[in-house]
Length: 237
Ligand code: ZN
Figure 1 (cartoon, protein in one colour):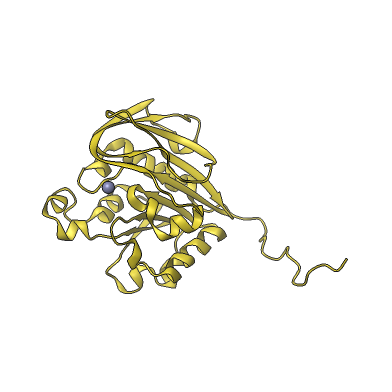
Figure 2 (spheres, helix red, strand yellow):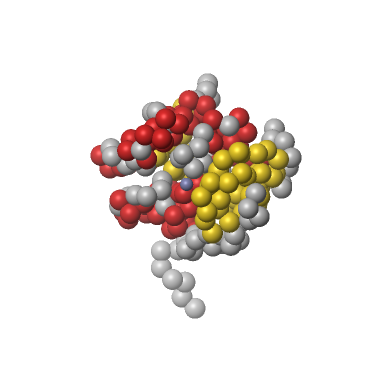
């Protein structure tokens, strides 16, 4: 059983009627519904819960975390962001969605500004540029999102391990929409589509990508721990 925790800021859905109309019980519950299966158990956590919904007990029992945040990244305590980073280094998978590019855990793991070019709604064509990658399995050459927020290059991230999807926007911009990274023993996938005003997470291809990403990002069974290979004292010359 893969234990997934979907973390969502969950502010737009509560405060803005037009967003509530798209995701009446929050983006986190929409993701939970399509993700849950006989082999995937999903817990949700939101910013307004005690400890942001991520006390140690939840963190330590999560195999893959999914992160959606936008306007309230600063309300996530630095200490919690650091704990998420440390869990990833030990092997927890992390899937960062859309405006989560500015979340504290993602920025900590990337070590860069994660800035990007931005524009309001546009039509996006999401191209699969790495069809043999596990996250691309079952996806067509491309699919279209009639309304999605434009994120454009240059995306200030470190060089990804793989670029799996590339987004083209009708306004002419390009974006590395699906990128993978390895940090310590953990796998990280960033996926750009998912603006809160549009029903992106109800799109069958977007759902397939997130399902594939969970399978890809789940921790592998380590044959032996790598934690004790460092000598406690510096080696004397
Ligand atoms: Zn957005």
